[in-house]
Image (cartoon, rainbow over all chains, first blue to last red; front, side):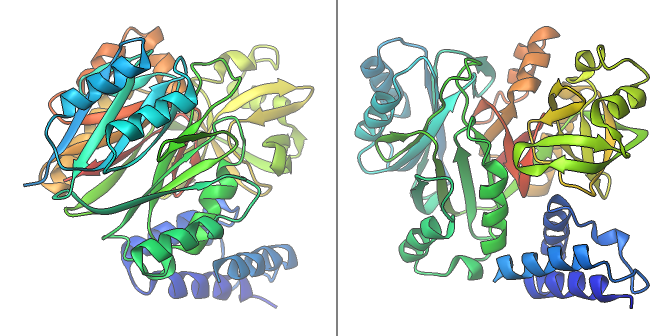
Length: 63
Length: 367
C-alpha cells in the first residue's frame, strides 16, 4: 500500500492551517522539527508503519 | 501613538538598579515590563524589586549570559522594556513551575484571562514569549507542546547565567523560579513580526541521523557510522580535531532553504551531544559560518520594510553568537545595529521560534 503518509500530512496541514499560507509554512516546519519532512512524501510513498505511528502521535497531540 | 521605552542600569545595588530603571522609564502608564538581568543579581530580589517598581504592570524576565539594550551589548546589568496601554492592550505571564508537566495547565490560565481558547486565537493579533530555564534541557518539550496547542507564535530564549552553568532563573510578577518556564501572552495594538537569523551557508555534506538517544540530545550514528567519525569525515578532519570546528561548522535541519541550527556540544566516545534535539531520520546539512553583522542587518532591515517602521525590538541572541562576536571584536558593532530603535535582549542558552534552535537570534519586532 502507498500514499497514506502523504494523506495524513495533508490532513494535519489542512486542519491546522485552514488555507492560511503563513500557517501552512509554520505547520510544515513543526512537522520537520518533529522528524517528518513533508516534502519527502508523495502519494506513491510506501506506507511505512513507523512513520504512520509517528504521525498518529502528532495527530493525537494536536487535538 | 505607540510608545515603547527602554532602560538599563549597571549599578551594583539592586535597589539602585530598580530606582534607576524606574526613573529612566519616567512618567509612563506602564502596562507591561519585560526585563533581563545578569546572573550577578540575586534572583528573588531582582524579580521582586522590578515588580515593586512597576506595581501596575505585568512584569516578567529571566537571568542572562549578557544583556543587549539599544545600541549596546552589556554585562552585569539589568535591561528593561516598558509598554504603555496604547501599545499593549493586554498581557499575562504565567509560570510553568514543573517542566515535566503539560503546558496546557499554564494555557488554561491564559485562556481564562483572555477569555478565549488558545486554539482559536488569531496569530496576527496575539504573540507569545517563552523564557525557559536554560539548563533544563526541556526546551523542545515546551515549544513543541505550545505549537501543538495553538497557532499563536511563541518566541523566546533560554535563560543564562554568565557561562557559570550552575543555575538559571525565570522571573514573573515578583517571584523567581528555576526548572521553570514563563509563558507570556501579549496582545499588541500594532503589527509585529519575527526575525530568525543565523549566519551560516550550507555545505554539500549531509549527515542523516541513523541512531540517536533523542531525550539526551545525543547522536550515536550519522549515515550508519559512529557519529563523531561521520562528522569528522564530513569536515575532512580527525575526530580529535573535530571539536575545534563546532562553532564554525554546526549542522542544520534545512527547510525551504532556511537552516534550523543544531550546535554540537561535545564528543563522548563515538557519540556527539548537541545543544538541541536531534531526531532519528533527520537529514542534517553541514553548515559554515558567515557574517553575523551583515546577516543580522539584512534581516532587521527586511522586518523594517515589512512593517513600515520599527518601534521596539526584543532580541534573543545565542551566547555562541555573542562569543563569536567578542572573539572578532565585533560586539560594539553588533550592538550598534540596534541603535536608534528601543531594543532589549540577552545572550541566551538556546533560542525558540516554532522550535528550539541554536546559534541563532530570534527577534520579536514591533511596528
